[in-house]
Amino acid sequence: TKHFPVRKRGREALTRGRRSVQAVDDVDLVLRRGRVTALVGESGSGKSTVARLLAQLYPRTAGDIRLHGESVTVKGGKAFRAYCRKVQMIFQDPFASLNPVHTVRYHLTRALKIHDRAGTTAEDLERALQELLTRVQLTPPERYVDKFPHELSGGQRQRVAIARALGADPEALLADEPVSMLDVSIRLGVLNLLRDLKERLHLAILYITHDIASARYFADETLVMYAGRMVEGGDSETVTQNPAHPYTRLLIESAPDPDRLDPGTDAAPGEAPKEKGSGEPPSLIAPPSGCRFHPRCPVAMERCKTDLPPRFEVADAPGHWAACWLYDSAVRS
Ligand code: SF4
Ligand code: MG
Image (cartoon, rainbow, N blue to C red; front, side, top):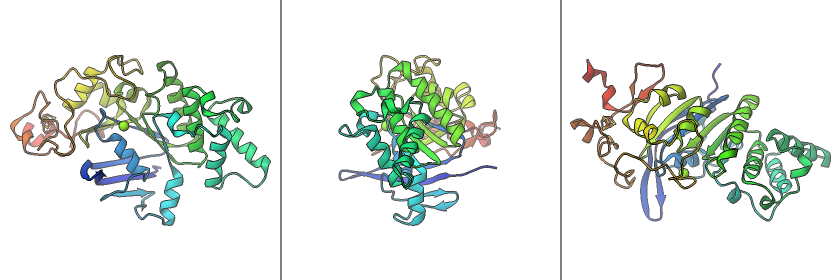
């Protein structure tokens, strides 16, 4: 049976300062338990916005989020509160997400208490803390539980942030660039931990990254975003080995090394790698007409300048699609 814990559909506007920006548009994604979905794009593509919208951190202007088919768009309702527990977010910078004046014990206890999982006795709480730390492989737990964030390495801090998210007993994790600020040598360990948790706890994971090589390694399904729109999707093997959309091809060509979980030396942590192709990602305030990628696309056609391409099926694999006129069978046949 398939589970549909989270479904997000619709267009979103986002107000930054006094300007209203159509940050993401026509985003439609389904997270399923036991599966990692990667959302790949360069900085400014809107991928973090999608995560924050799903985490209910931004007010939405339109669209719908459903959990098990039930809409959770009404703030404060029972469904909304259940959603906020079941869908937990993990941020890019584990140092910023942990309060430096509080210990690991404080952070985890608070999460357990908020979600009513601390038990009634001191022993219950201690057991729950030990279990969380063991889950994220910070063992023995006694070594870590009374530490402050600055006494931990980046990787350990990110594990604490993951443990805190698990304190809510979630069904889905939204992980926004969870390893891009960590040393290359420990990225794999954290991704492997997330994969292990996905399997053992049957979690749905949204993995947001600029690094398409890591999506291939880590995600079951990969979605590619460009300028606030999803442009390609399918199983990760297909999308990364057999990319259909010209933008995905550009991303893969410009990835420094497909076998490394490393954005390369030309990119600062958290930044998209520099591209070989010309041009910059477009402004979301005034996105290009038609296909938003057309000013940079090496195979753009006349209609691409005016007509927005819908999602077309790509014939090579089931579920593989691209929002690109090259796959319009009405034209090809
Ligand atoms: Fe290029 Fe046209 Fe496809 Fe857009 S729709 S990616 S411009 S070929
Ligand atoms: Mg981001």
